Image 1 (cartoon, one colour):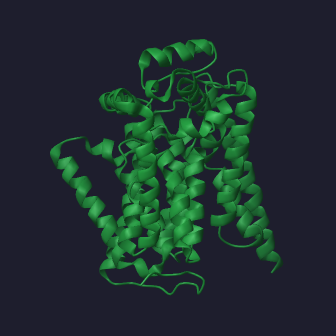
Image 2 (spheres, rainbow, N blue to C red):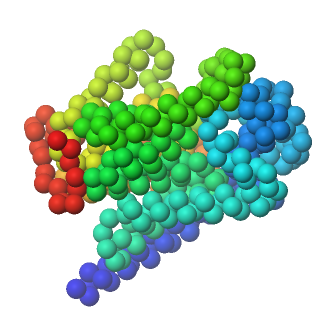
Image 3 (cartoon, helix red, strand yellow):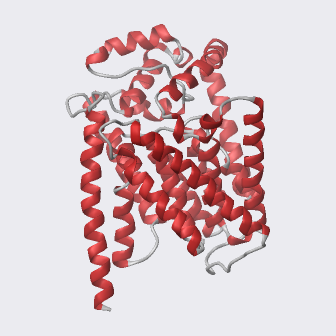
Length: 394
């Protein structure tokens, strides 16, 4: 018993040291393109703050007007204070941040980072498996992963998506589908990171959760159409392809399977086949409960999304953590271990694109390998008993 405790304590100390090193690497990486304590506007929250102020000052129908964006950017101090790139996201993040945009930026930044930290702690409490030192080791391991550290330092809205999925999964395990569907509406803050998850819920039989989510999504879409008006909506749709291209320029192509295979007709067909495979895994193994359904839905989404930034990979870590509750096989655990090491090592290089290209490709390969193992498992009809507290739809 004492040997086990000592081993767990040593693992916790090693992971804590790794987290400190990763934090230093992340700070250095972000500082290399201007994000320091003296230029907090270079965080992702700086963009959210800028977008909200555009809506508050010029009207939400001008949110995607480049000339208005530039005016507001210059009013905030321009390149000396804040970054600016064409807006690609729907207006929902800007609406969420709108109350904070009424405050001075330093105050708004502090409040937003408090929200992000709280959401992350909530996700850890809900998802991290084990007890005692083992549970603490998993929590620190999450902090030692480069995507998580970057997301936290930047104030990335991906943390809100992670918290929403974690809460939705927790509620599904307890049979509370209506609440789960309502919470999962928050994934629309960054919809490309969990695009398959609602469909996964429907395929797995969580119909009430899906219908609640769908109702919330329709309400937000209608509100978006009304707020943007004809001109704003036209501007958004017209600029969306260019904005997506800009987003891909900021994201190493090797982090996204969709970018790796290109945009040809054959590539689109391959994406469709992969989506169908993911949904078949979920359908066949739905009796393993929301652990497998949510984890596979997230993995499938990350494989099929059109672009992935490094902080977005925190969603992969969430999928892995949830999958640990599904009693993975030893082979699947080995794939998860290598995947974690790749996520940790994504910043271990002075040149951010040299090793990242290799590790990014490895991450995509491991995602596909895990899905492949699950597909083979589904083909053999392997099912495992779930804890009594997990509710499985009929």
